[in-house]
Image 1 (cartoon, one colour):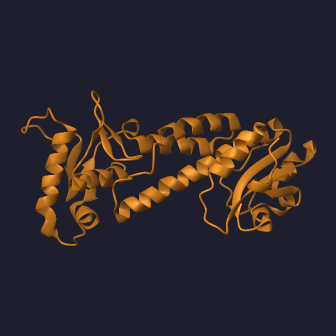
Image 2 (cartoon, one colour; image 1 turned 90 degrees about the vertical axis):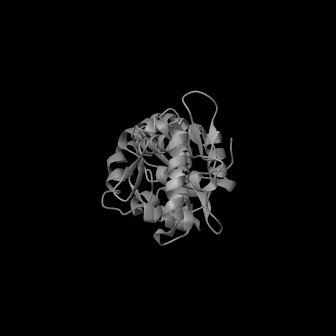
Image 3 (tube, one colour; image 1 turned 45 degrees about the horizontal axis):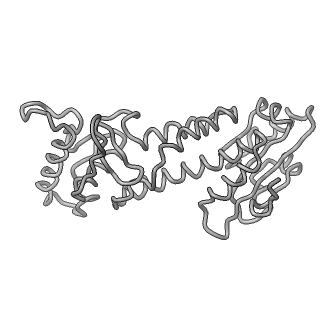
Length: 271
């Protein structure tokens, strides 16, 4: 069994079409268990998050929802056999699944690898693979406090991936594509703007430029390497969000910032 949570939550049987869960509480219980990434979730937490109850008054309803979910997950299981997918834990439940079974887990694994890659081409390839899994807002048809936090976390990861994609395209000389991605990927509310930072230095200054980053508390999600700089013609590109041009430059060490230009995406001319 596989699971879809990017968009509407649904079961994806090995054979046959997707199977949406029509009952809201069962759908939300499944979503909360998937958001836990295999970790146990207590009955109390499920009752509070799904039923809005802080006591065990709704425990019977939770048990009914779990029983129905188990029937959907393992329709051929004999009542005498123990559940294999939705298992009971000490005082709660857990969903047994692997990364390949859940679209959001696939997306997160690939996005994390892309953001950590040193080579722009490799990062771009991994980012494209991750993006294919993104079919819509996470847990779009479920609404709980826990799922709202998980939705925000995944959407922030996607925003980081789009920023990194723009940087990689710029590093590879694909400027038109990069600026389109940067403009489309902006997820920040005003007064924040998206800036393209472009840093150049002489070939013999590579070591000095990168030494400036050592010990510098920069919030940049992507720090280039010497290899990527040399292969990119001794220039570095970033896309960042900031309120002003100076705020954008302040994200960099002083030595790097004084050799960097900052331009809003909307003001950059696409060749």
